[in-house]
Length: 355
Image (tube, rainbow, N blue to C red):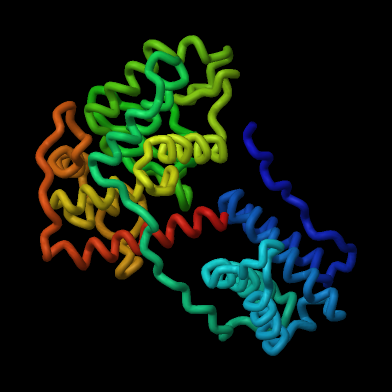
């Protein structure tokens, strides 16, 4: 069964100058500025934790918060242990402190407090971890071969795995994929409202597209329930897939393949990007497919044309065509880009898990 979504519980309190009321104002301000609902939900949780910590120490209004108080809260997060005994990662600590700093920046600009006590607060240094595993081409094929093609749901799952491998979509992007986002003639798919509420167009290989077309012709008609909302991949009840279900399903196939590596949707995202880089793709084209800015400068680079991006994808992705091309070793000139890319993807995966 899909996991229930985390409920959005707003802080409680009637004091108009209190932590709860001003937190609610801040969250409404975020919505009015078109922040994603996921960001609002996460910051709600982080600010509830901060408000509860302050209340335990007799601090009930933001104007009572000082720089030393925030530093104490930062030390509290560092020493905090989950029920399992595990500490909060430095990345999570940084995200939670950033939420508090942003909250006080809003309060300062809205004249609720005279100054921002967190303006110069130093964030924890976030480690840059490499992915735990990346699949080889033969290992990918073993995972792709796991779904039972005699079963309708197995055919659906094979199409999902092929899209993950071909286009490197995030799990939320797979779940939200619409029939109208697929362009069979051009061999592309449109990712709408991806991370940061940004649209992007990416290539989809001929093999992946062939599996999707087979699923659409042979399986989806028996799953859809009117009115058809247009989602590509459906459950047995005609509903769109949930993110948690997709994560668990892909993880099961990876484990059943016996490749000896752990991972789920992001494992395919890492693998796609790494294999394209090893095939000679320029880092800029891969970043365009992944949907994020240059990790070295964090600046928005010039968007490449979809035609050129398709050509690079077809020439460098081992699963882009119906015939498997020969593999080429990673050249020394690409090693720096390779390490930078996998580190960026690992950070993205960690952030996705925290969210």
